Image 1 (spheres, rainbow, N blue to C red):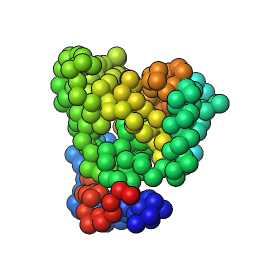
Image 2: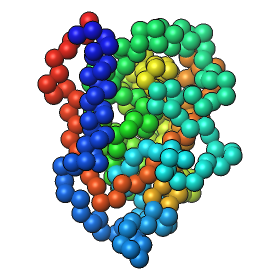
Image 3: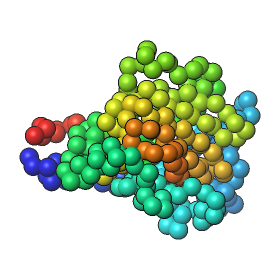
Length: 272
């Protein structure tokens, strides 16, 4: 199968998964206990964010990415970071991403190759930023010591440790697709730092690069029951000349569950 056909297969799989979540969910839709509702019985997305027993904002729920101006909530404040793009993470950054010569070389080659080696096209785990902007939903399960993120896309699973541990030293850490994530609370914002990532990573469809020298910092804030913002800062001196930050908006999907998405099922293509 040629490159264009392989990418088409991957795109169709993602499209089917996204549409399926709204058309034929595997679990029947049922009222979720604890959801604030309007007088008409609809989920009140503008209600205050729920809190856990220890007073922290509760990030738990099924979420989907959304952009303002398309049913996704109020316009962004003037001082907010630019919104990340799924195809091009830096599409809304003035002047584009601050690529080093090495970063420019990597991105140029990936674009010239029509993004044929994007991990998503090979049923491999996407990068953290691409997961955030990807159209399929994700489920957050929060406990006092651990936040688990279940990505519907490719059945990805990520753990964020909230128990005060430090990231493993780079000499001891085997690089992982999702890296090693530890979080701490700063007021009502959960700050997650991820290191120990594999080299030759992808941040988006076109192939904006990420290397094993990277640190990703996410600032996650549930601003209301129905809305969450995630500001991601990328530091990677190998491929970027300075840190840069983008925002991803999320909207709750009340009374719904994830569907099963097995990317490798029935695939019959091999890497050419």
